[in-house]
Every structure is written in C-alpha cells, then in structure tokens.
Image (tube, rainbow, N blue to C red):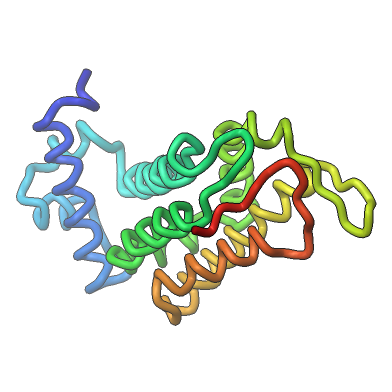
Length: 202
C-alpha cells in the first residue's frame, strides 16, 4: 500500500516541508503548485500523484492534524476504565502543541480554513471513540444534579478547541507546555465533580 511506502512517505514530507517554508515567505493565495514542487525539488507530476491541487494539500494537512490528535488522546496511553493519568495526558498534549508551533505558518492557515465548530466536531467524535469505556462509567454531578455525559464531552471539547484556536491566532503567545498544563487543569478540575473516574496526578 502506497501510504506505507517509504518513498511515498518521504515525498509527502518533502511536499509538506516545502509548503511550510513557502508559507513563511508568502501568502497562501500567491503560492502555486510549481512553487511547491520547486521548493520540494520534485516535478509537478510527482506533486499531482499526491494531491490534485494546493487546496487538497491543505485538506490533507488538516486531516493529518486530526490524526495526530487521535494519537495524543489515545486512551490506552493515559486512561483505564477507572482512572485518567493527568501527567501523561499533559505531556502528550504538550508534545502535540509543540509540533503545531514548529509549523506555525501552516497552523495559521489551518486556523483560517477550518472553523472551531468543525474542529470541535472532529474532537468530540475522537473523544467518544477513544474513551467509550471511560464515558460509559462516567457519572458527573454539580450540586447533586446529574449532568449528561454528552454535555461533559461538549464542555471538554470546547475548552480544547477554543484554547487551540486562540493560541494559534494569538501567534503562540503562550509556551506549549504552559498551554497544555492550563487545558488539562481546566478539564480535570473544572466546576464538575466526577464520580467513578479517578484523576491521577502523581
């Protein structure tokens, strides 16, 4: 399968890196396929074997960002049915933010091309998929009033997506580790009392 072919993946990386470099020098609108191919030192036919145009390339990068996010929130790394390891979650999230910051020009374009609602929908689906077992046992109350699980998921995703979009649009005004710590603190401490799921901090 070509997605696992080393040469294919190497060319993907060349195209991505070329696109990122070009975005640091000129606007997205002024970048052509020839520019990308030239920067990547490949011919246009090779580029078109991967993407039909630069918009498709941008969509591919957005999908990659979502795939990377899926790895970050993989429940097998940070959670059991009874507990969530906050320190591991924070470290993984900081690593994810760092990768985004390293490609800041690309991140800025992504923030303009995808709405917060769309990103929140992707994240909500991933969260429910990855944490099905945890969410099934989740009981959340506020002042002894039961709160629906889907509300809890919406609350968590709004914190994550809102802070991510703010961070990118602010020009990365906060360090990646600081943002990760803040987001995890908000999610784990919030105004909600979680019963049945332990928050591990040590």
